Amino acid sequence: MLRSLSKVGQICITQLKASNGKSSLMTAMAQHVKARCETYPRDNIKRFHVPDDKVSWETDFPGYSPTEYTSKSLIGTLEKPRPEYSDPDPKHSPVEFEKLKFNDLDGDLNRCSHVTDVYEIKDGYPVNPMGRTGLKGRGCLGRWGPNHAADPIVTRWERDKDGKIKKDENGKGILQFVCIKRKDNGEWAIPGGMVNAGEIVTVTLRREFGEEALNTLEMSSEEKEATLVSIEECFKHGKEVYKGYVDDPRNTDNAWMETVAYNFHDEAGDSLGKLKLHAGDDAVGVQWMSIHKGLKLYASHHDFIKEVVEMHGASW
Ligand code: RP5
Image (cartoon, rainbow, N blue to C red; front, side, top):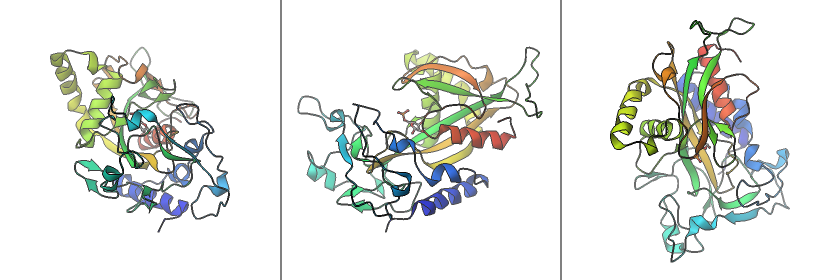
């Protein structure tokens, strides 16, 4: 039985309350918006239009006829097998598809959701717990159902030339976070990434930050090791900010992004705050971005950043 949108929202909030005692992501989680963007991010695919009042699966939408799209690169051919991170497609590999263990640990891959205890399986396909998106299939996402990511939010205080924390007109300190520019769409984002099969989230957080914000992929193995060790201590003291659904433009009716976001804050500005940033992997830019409410960020990242601002009583 599929839960209603508001119920799903409440489930997210329950998880949030358990982790940090707050509930400010309620509005963000009440309904996905970017997951219904008119044009799907790859291949110029148009989504079937889903009005706000028809997002919930519990609302009848008799004319609903979503576009079907799964990127060819995920399916593979005899010459070019599908990538390791890609699930089998029922039309091309039905026997393999049948074996996928939804709502469960599937070998070393986690197919459970942070959003709901059990997501619905309809006609063999997982159903997006946040409602209709106007697109069925997997789009460009590797997994049917939840695609798990991790987002490291690395912060420091913005300081003047004398090292004093800059304040806004209300006397609140201004935070900065490490922000990358995504190669795929040029949007600014938290340097997050996918959790690899068998990988623990703390490792994903460090690896993705290293690859996208410090360019560890282009370092010698000694240099990379030293860089990862240098951030290891600071990354031990992160605070969970959010765990749940991401309103990502790549989501579909059958595949969606979920994340765990952690804040790693350098209060004195002398450890993480001093890192030499260098964009790498899927990032084409990186900077310490001063935080304010007008920031335009990828997916639901604006909401995660707002949560961090509240945690630190910073300027917004
Ligand atoms: C977002 O996509 C997550 O919040 C995370 O930041 C990101 C992971 O996807 P890739 O950056 O690996 O494409 O939904």
